[in-house]
Figure (spheres, rainbow, N blue to C red):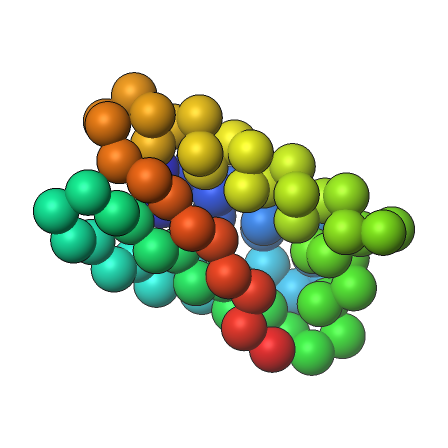
Length: 76
């Protein structure tokens, strides 16, 4: 799951080498923290938050396959 979100995030930004994704797992939850370059934050958020919402929806769909709840946070 982390790899899929990382591919999506790297495709959206100008500095793909600055994209880092941290993954924290517990019994029934997964937390993904996306870190990007400061100038790329707006590209990950998108207009009215549409891009980050889409990323969260993809992550939640992948999490449902594993029976886990997924949260995606953007760290600036």
